[in-house]
Image (tube, rainbow, N blue to C red):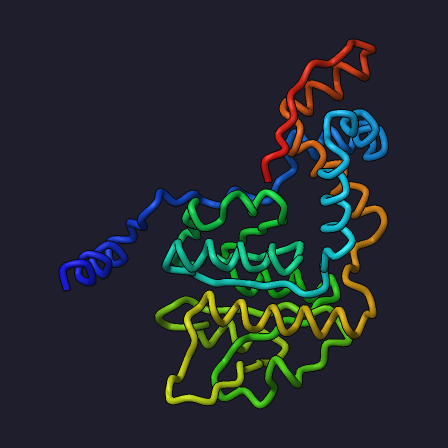
Length: 265
């Protein structure tokens, strides 16, 4: 009982165990700037000697299965463990993006759960659910809310076009205004007495099923454009080489680089 009470109190104070981190804003960081300046081909060619053949092969396998046309959106996530679990699940499923809406609660994720997987994804933060939905829709993505009682389910919804699925927080779900702004709603099939899944479980079930169906529809595991793949390949190479920005810049100036591999994922 003491443990249960302490865990409940910890969540009420919004003080998660295992030191959470706050997701940074959408990047154009030093690595992206490097790739834009020198081009992905040059960055890849420069950094490839510092990676093992096995590491390069693994990066290429993951890239080939990267899916951009199925996206998760979470709004006002309360529990850092759930936030971390959603990120880790989305990356493990090969999804490239996750959108984070923070209208009342700042998104945090427990470091021990993500295990660094957020580095390989595009995490986009929004202060308005409507702005997020509008931006996704403008890019050709259909945005669906998760709502109990919806007539469409993750098994029946049309997946012939890119799709984003919104998940609400652990206590209140999605606000009515968010649901109204979406293009429709879907439900997760349930067959027991329980009326809802945990947030991270809901995201795992929905995104897994939709990603599987979307890949089957496309007839290929991944759908990123050649240009996007080249940029990500260069970025992931850079993430695995210590001091990658300096290595490329020094090589560009015809100075022999010194570096160390970080093949630890």
